[in-house]
Length: 214
Image (cartoon, rainbow, N blue to C red):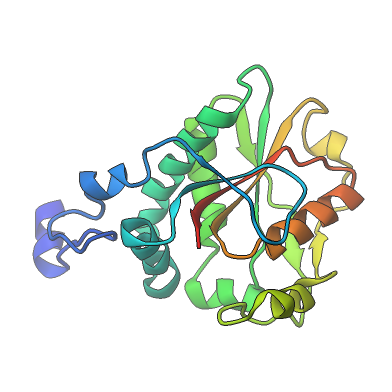
């Protein structure tokens, strides 16, 4: 069946376009190294890490998921995220992954939330880890593409909220490590506002990990 599907809908690598595979070993290698410490212009107040720069295969894969609905790529992106988290985590403590929020209109157009899907994959590879979707954007947030730092700050200020009334102690253990995850970090405004919203809900974020840093 796989060979028949390849004849009808030939698979191409989401990173380099190579025929015959959805994600080649070379492109996987671009996301296989240890996380890189980054310091966003808008400091969220917690350590921030990235798997790669926003170029080459990692950039192509992120865009393929967002713009061309290549949902098959959320699996290798999630596996790469799991490897990065394994470098950073304290294995003696439970790990909670909180996906960065996305605009509802964008999620509808894409047929889902790629960051949340990658977080689910990552959690499935890590013992004692689970994703918790608890952040959302209020109405009125614009697409951030093309916005400068000040415009991004104005666009998101006070517009990320915790979308649950359950206390953190019910959602996850008190000793859990909480990590925010996203696909691309540009200025850090989304992460800063997310950390702020979670802090208001008495959730302490240990770190931020993104697939790419622009």
